[in-house]
Length: 255
Image: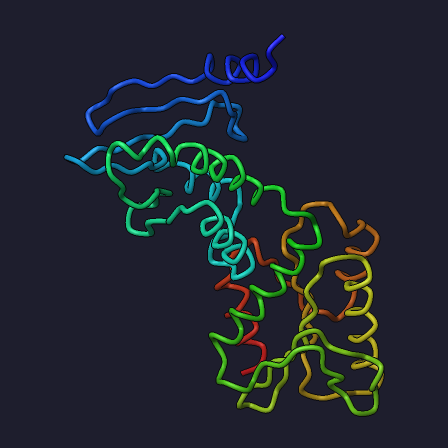
């Protein structure tokens, strides 16, 4: 038994290289999340060549909900790109290598395939990373909309209620303030409900408590917590239903 030859044969038997107008199409035995085999191209132009994906992988990831406008996800992607010597062409949505001499292109194949296999991990970020990304995206959108210095985070908004920390505070020129709680779990929802009850109980003027859900799919937040929140004085919004609409709603309520 020669394990090296057996492994090489198992991999190489699933590797198909065929000539196409741009150079070569390479199909591998490694699968994409859709179940299809990962494939890519060797584009040849005269004496130079580079490897590139089909142009659909980026759109496949976005279609599955990966948000590349998120700073968190872009940091992860940038790290993968750097680690494997790959670049992303934003102009045409391609993952590709740098141009090299045609005879050197084969040496780039394994690092490029490894990158293509790993980039799909962006689909499987654990729940905590997704939560922090949602909160980060919401803060970023608010900061882009409101005047500099109007948005702050983790602030005890009301002096008489120092133990009630508001996740995101937005102060407007009108004197009204939005107290925003991103709904990431039952605890965050119930914190928002208690805060809104205290605002009402103490007759705190010009503070509008918001509870903003990432989406309304059942997950980390139980049905009971959702019902309690809907029956409270919290102003609800849903991020997945339209980000611009959520920001505009905050603007309307604090004008």
